[in-house]
Image (cartoon, rainbow, N blue to C red):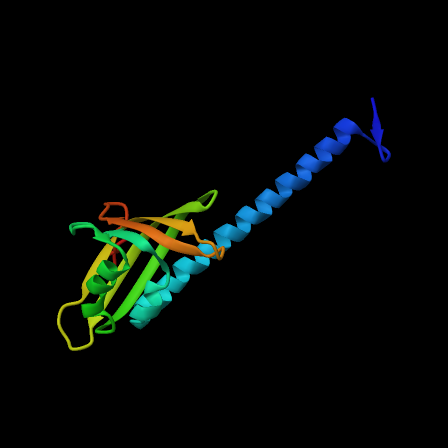
Length: 165
């Protein structure tokens, strides 16, 4: 067996493999944290009613498919959908992340979501809960952008009724 600088070749290859594996795990953890940060930023901007900055989180060709509505294709359709209601309600939006997986320059985030919007001018409070599948794409600047947002009502993601267990 040939030695390379004091190491047997198989041992050196094993150490190199471990180092690459550790780097891959570190890179994935960094990507997951970045995606969680983009998801949190989306919530902050949406609840603040900041439509212009919210749109910067999407790819130009993004698709939003909300349950019971036709798909919105592209940033302009998404903007036009959100614009009429932005800032007109006190909004609470929470997510319960169930899974994030990275697939090269694409990633998905699966979560339960809970939205409450109380109109500032009075009226009925809107509540929506369900599950979201979000697909993110990494752009040339190494930023994760939202490409696909699919929301659906689901019986295991509902608001708890006060006083019930």
